[in-house]
Length: 299
Image (cartoon, rainbow, N blue to C red; front, side, top):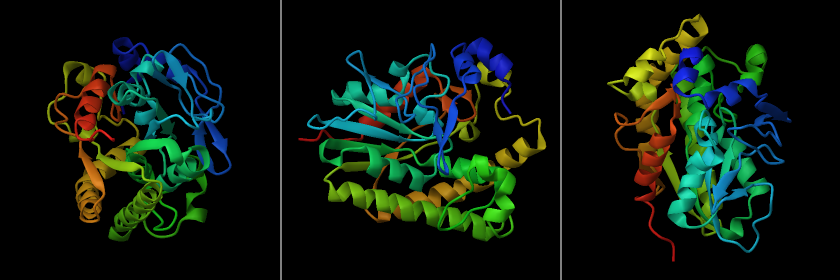
């Protein structure tokens, strides 16, 4: 796995993330710790990271009733691990493009159904304009164990010690990746229905990671990105590389067939990674530029 000692030399803003007690629990859902304030990031009373719009912290916890806004939803790369400030996140960058506040709705290794629950519980859909969903958290979670329930998705990080009691089946059998794809299709379509019923424009991002990159930068090589010194890390990375092609093709082709707008991520070769799954600040800006250009202005 990435060498975080070397990574912090190239990306000093990573240090507050490593030092902070960043995760919490809300029932069975893994969240970010509420009211967490560091030099690099801050979270609201629900554990969602603040975004910035016109210099103001934007929080999911505060009601935005009567004010138009959009939201970005996903896992730790939406949260913005390693970025030097709330203003560097994709949500904040999208707010500059849309000229209205954009909420950062993110959970660690986010399962799609958990994010749908957050959307329904914490967001006023009446004034929501655009929802941009990065669905990769469930795939990343799957890569830890090779297990997936077609109803509940892959097991969460905090369930890994008891995974045998919660999930049945043999890891890495064809049924497991099929279960994951079925789970993702089902719950993304449910989010699409929620948005359609509220007249919200819904977009899904076919995002990519360091593992899809052919030519790493010198900084990425020096940080040992893609290297997995521990057996568990090797299994996780090997699963990612083994299944990512089938996962992306079967999932996103089906979503397009069902008239769900999939945003093209573009080339990964000019994207710079902090670690295997998180983009640096300039690359976050590049990604937002590409994605926002595919989103029509809403009248």
